[in-house]
Image 1 (cartoon, rainbow, N blue to C red):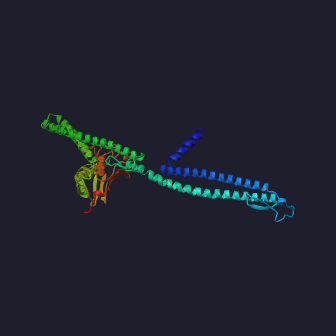
Image 2: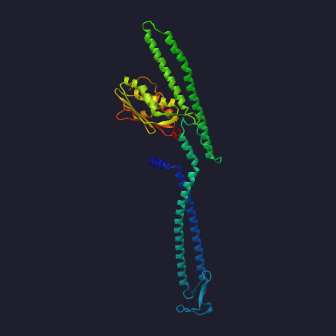
Length: 420
């Protein structure tokens, strides 16, 4: 029992791996084969029955015929003019050999009927197989057309993210089950878009509202704890100011993340920006901090002009390079390159596991404590991904050899490039 149950479960598992379209086409072909086989069996049965009835009629008609019609006949010398006729069969046989000849005729007729039935079964079977294959192909085509809206829903579900929740299927056609499925999917996207917009507004508003009291707090600390201070309060003041600046940087990062998450609409004004010039400017600003940590910062860029938001693109570069400096090792290096439409930032550091790569771009992720700087809140690569998505770019990360990380940003959308 257990073995049979496992066999059935394995069979169901194998069947479940077959695409639904193939299963539907196979069902069409199987139904046609069953219907054709049933029709062929009925035709053969009726043909055999009709032939049998005809042969019985021939035998009865031959048995009722009387030899000679009053003429004298010899069994060994039959007269050619004296004959018995089987009227139903249309065959005239000599009366002296009537019984034997009737048997010959019946055997020949039976042989011909068997051969005819065999030929009917053979060629009808071949035709049935051909038509079954054609019906399966037709079923494959019909299934593809019928499942086209489902494929559209699947493709949309794969491509939809928090960056393009405004997209909709807007399926046209009759009001059937597939149309209602697409409408339900669009309604779900409406709810998700409202939820994400509400979350972004909350983050932006909360960050904005908190910046003012933090600024006031910093001013009070600077004024209220101005020099000269009693012994011991100077260190307290520096700790408070450091904590205040750290909170302000966190709020600024959250505001930047909320802004980039909104994306760039088709109507947003874009500026021609040279990404290579921004990279040189960013590397120049961060080089002193890299030198303090003993990090070698190198640059190899080619001109890359695109239409975008220069402020966001500068933050993208700043966060990439700063992250490469912070998550490094003593006497390490950071290399920034721009080739074609690809920006690459490579650094040295400790090896990263595959499961850690999947978490790199999540907010507030700081993988381990092996880094050269203690600043940061784990938002750098989240901001990079958000800004890149707003500019139609993709971000990928690969572990370096023997350690470190390579982050690549590919600008692919034609919207961001034009003839100069």
